[in-house]
Amino acid sequence: MDAVDLYTLVDEEGNEKLFELVDMLEENGQVYFALIPHIEDPNELLEGEVELVVLNAKTDDEGNEILEPIESDEEYERIAELFISRLDAEQDEDDEAE
Image (cartoon, rainbow, N blue to C red; front, side, top):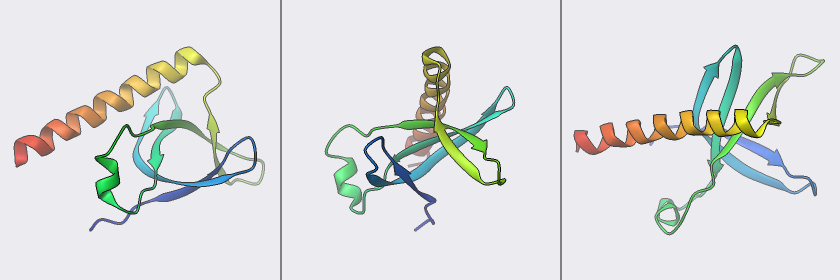
C-alpha cells in the first residue's frame, strides 16, 4: 500500500478534519493542493460522492507552508477543472492498465 500524505484542516468553527493529498499542481507560479477527506475504509469511497477540496499553498511569515482557500470563484473553478481533468486522465490510465 502506498504512503498517504495527510493534512489536518481546521474549519471556520475550529473543527479539525483529516484530509489526504490526491494531487498537486503549479499554475502561474502558484502551488495548489487537491485533497479529499481521509477515509480509513476504502469501501466507503465507493458509497457516495467524494468532496474535493482545492487549496492554495502559501508561505507564512515564519516560512511555514500553509494551505488557504482560493479567494476568487473564477480561479477556484479553473483550478478545480484542471485537477478534475488530471484525475480523470489518471483514472482512464488505471482502467486501461487493468
